[in-house]
Length: 332
Length: 126
Image 1: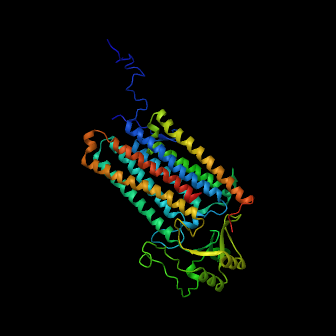
Image 2: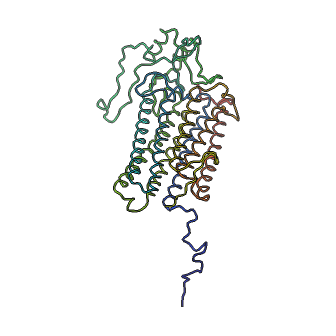
Image 3: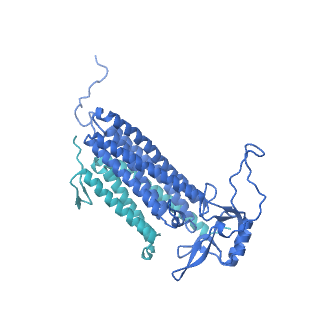
């Protein structure tokens, strides 16, 4: 006598099992759900960035003044390089989707070439991001941090087509270097495990003396005024601010200090673009693996290039995230 | 293999002959949108600086253009247009709802903290 029911009489009906209501394979569906969760991670980061920005809306750094460099060119070109990076990533997305399309038609040669181009695009992007980081870490003008952690920058007014415009001045252009006995503490001296970070080129006194000696140089604070520009102090206020509140000289940006403004900006920049860059890097690695599988004919034998499609989904997602990072870090 | 692609974008305004052609078409669209963003970002026209619902009009334009780009990347590059309605809604609605929720809460809170710094007796600036 049967004690278990082996058949329910629903075979072949809607609830009989074996249906594919989404008409997508398991792997592709799981890639989509992974992307949803990863999208939530990124939006968590970007929303946290938005939180901090709204919190300090009156003193947040202006991105156009931060990212102004283009490799091999001197001068002030805001947005140009990051626009180029965006274009590279969109382009590599296009070659990826062309690879997927060629895979649908089982054209191995075309898939190989398009995958190759996608990998090259990814490498150019990661390289550009490394360069962007290096430029940001190095900094360009230098600034003074106050006791309260605010950033004071320097500049002077120049005539541009009959209009007074505030132009930044680098510390090196006006600070008066004095003989200094303060040497950087290295691991090899004293306690072997204790080390300090690189000392700034100038001390606060050297900057103050330089400011006193150059009557046209003024201090600019972080506060954004009604015209959407950073507030420039008068000559007396400038001298008083540096003398009374100046604590340390800051050059470039890291996780502790940031010459462009609040250190939160640098923290979020490193964390979000770093996390995205890591995604691009891992995408490139996965692309390379799939690329060799294509060359070896794995998918030709399998009879389907769906693996290319799945890694393509991941690659497009990386592009999708960059579109948002681009907007919220560089445009808005 | 029967891979039926839907070959029209902008609600049928532009129809493509093949999937490859559609990909290039979408690339052109995305490039134009990015170019508009970059040009607006560099020149920042004065007339777009007016405040609309708590933010500059220019920033709203940037955010809308970003969502437009995200739509075409998901729908055409990731082939969301060709997936079943159920899969599409599972992915898109879930993400859109949760992200809107999170962004609303955090931005609201950020604005509140800012107002405390600006108007009340707590000071962090010195």
